[in-house]
Length: 554
Image (cartoon, rainbow, N blue to C red; front, side, top):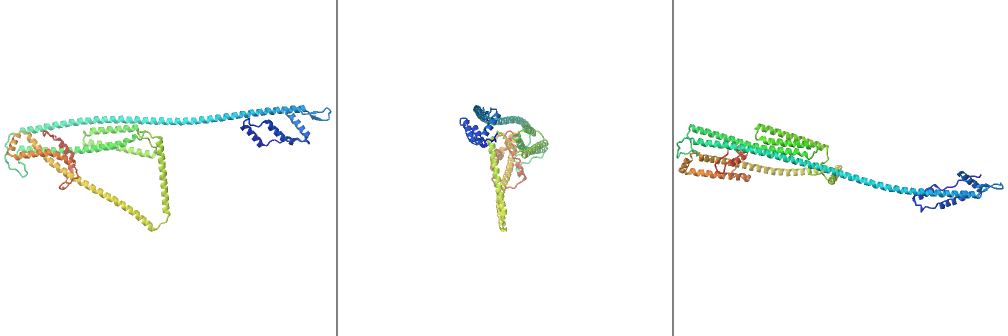
């Protein structure tokens, strides 16, 4: 047996290239296996077997074939001289090897085609998987959008229900207010009717007392006094009359004072009610900002409105002390509510910075994003301006300056401050002058109103005297005196003319311009200051005089 030689096989890179070509290329383009085997064998024949080692190669091939399971290719010669090649065995072995090679090639081709099919199916499945994944994401986005839209619709529905509830509450409050005001009006009408009946009875009693007087002697052509009034006899009746007149004067003064106090109380009530309304409106604004406090806010607003209505109904019927205590307690309660509301707002501002939608509707997503982008851009601009200012300050501080330049800059700043202060001082002086002018005009108007009130009181007293004399049983006797003294008739007609013309002048004076200066400057007195509080009482007295001069309501 000769030395064995190893067969030189193709290199690893060539084998890999061959396998990749088989996998990536179709079967029609692959090289035929017979050509590849022929090429390989043609390259290995010359290296494996030569004329020198022919016997050894035959022996090696015979051994290898026997190990594989083929029959031997050498046979013993008939002469017994040695072993020789058996051609039939060689041909059978070669044929068997070729058949095995063809089977292996077919199986390889089948495996490659199956692998290509599997790769194609895998790519198709991967594409289907990607498409299904995209569809799943799209459906998720649509589901999120639908959920957000449903949430917005629910919020809008809740807001609309809350608005409807608020409107119903407002309607109920207005109905309660109308009912309370109607009852107040009915009470005031009944009270006025009772006062009117009392005054009629009083006037009737006074007239009947005058009629019950006995006939007395009247003095004709008496000597008048310096003040133009006639002196009267001092008797018991005159003293009683003077006492009665004194009581009348006192009653009139008390009634005037009471009317003034009523006017002041009405004004103070109006101011307090306005304050309460403003406070209630401020407190009730938390309904639109806090969803969790809707129920408590409605309850507190109902309680406040009920308190306000009850206070409006009871203020006119209670005494001064009770009214004052009730108003003080209500104002304190409103201030406590306002204080608690402001503290809640401060706490919310410190803890929460998320904007809530308003009552009219929800904030759109696009608008919300636009507002956020705008705020971010503004913040960036502010940061850039702050950074630039810091850089300028650093540069200004880093640059060395002389004392002269620093003093010059300080002087410039001081000059700017002085100019600004001068402008503000000029504006202050102009406002002060306007205020002084308005105060002077107001004082003059108050003085003028005081004088007009005095004249009106004199005319009123004259008219009452004339009216009372006309209603007595001595009207015939008075007409006799007027025939004898024609100047008296003229004075009475003049008083009537003055009385009828005075309300018109009063209206003109009150509706005119108070800034008009009077012809003669008068000093400010306590009566002129007190006359401002009696303007409304004077207008009420003017309205109480009837046009037909037959009745007067004090």
